[in-house]
Amino acid sequence: MVPNDKSGLRFTLTRHNTKADIDLLTDAMAYHLPKAIEEEGDSVERVYEEFGFHLHKKEEGFQINPINSSNLIVVQYRTIQDIDAEDWDIIFKDKGNISHSGMQAVEEIFSNNEKPEENWDFYYLIIKDADGEIILVTFFTSTIYKDDMLAQENVSKQIEEIRKTDPYYLCSKTLAMGSLFSEGEHLYIKSEHTLVKNALNEFFVEVEKIKKETQSVVVILRDFYSGFQYHERFEGEGFVKVNMPNSLQLKNITWNTEGEMLASIPSSKKREGIRYYALKKESLFDISIKNNLTNEDAETCYKLFLNVKVRNFGFNFFSYPSKITSVLSKCDDYEFILIRLKDQSEIIASAWVYNGPLHSSPMIVGLNDAYIKSHKIYQQIVYQINKRARELDKETVFCGFSADFEKQKYGAIAVPTFAYMKIQDTYNSEIINSYSNM
Image (cartoon, rainbow, N blue to C red; front, side, top):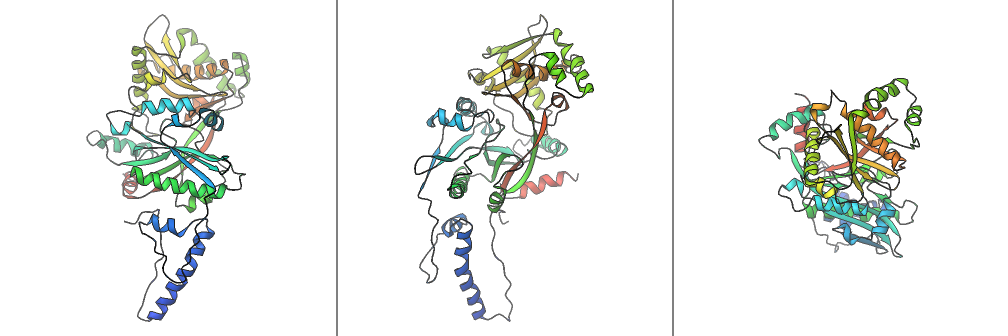
């Protein structure tokens, strides 16, 4: 099977073709191929390397002028601790939960675990010009993904039945921009820089190097929104654009009271729903905000997460390590919204929330199934997330990957989000597609 990230020229020979005809064809290819590749901002050396061949330059007339990227500084790091925190936080300010300290927490969570899918390799990439001006910044993680991560829910449900006895069925080593515990813009490009084209060339060279180093068979570049100006460039590298679940975002929120919040919602039906299911029932609960959790509370929050995770197939991934709540509890950028019944000690709902300078990112919501219908705790936790964001004077709430009606009541909009994917072997994808016909 030919990987879809490589292509070539196929031509037919018949007995009418002479050896001279074939020589003319190869001579033309030898002349035009380097020029065509150079016009695309690439080099013959890299093309040969991509196919696993060593380039010999002895042939007469086969002149190669490699792209000159010597005026760029390409630096790769394996841990966020080796990167200047101020520079990183300026670039990714309010881009989600990927601040310098936030990434330190993620590195700790997904290292030194027993299960292979809970151990991630981290790669940070910074490309600068000769004067040290930053042109491109991003980071990658490599680990085992479920290949049906973005498949239809009914497909993933069928596959999960098989994974009960074969846990790594239809799973692949994957290199992804960002991580499975992040949402937002993971790629910074200084598009007005004169060397941005060269920087993108180096970016794709580095992606290929990391892919080979990690022995990944799938590469995913995410999250991108409409208007992304380098679409053709990414497709030219063999990446296919794929839709991701919509990113729900509540923007430009300025209300400070219940009355102002309700007045900001144009739909009377949605206002009444919030009044009945959230505001009137708030007195049934004790709401607390914690930066640091006890071991018992950390364990409870993790179990509540699993309650939700086990039935959510819309974005299918392996569960996080059980130590995640304890580690996030040590990170100043995170806090936990905890809901208990009045005068009771048991936590029945929780939200793990990352707070940036001007935004809030509720990363995980956990629920006790016994209270979902009777006490409407999901409606309550959504309200408390938005209420807390305003208490902290946040202007934006990143509400996660779901077109959830409850979040939309408050004015959250569904932002179409997409990724670019390159698959070395399409065998697993073809099997997954066959499940949709069952």
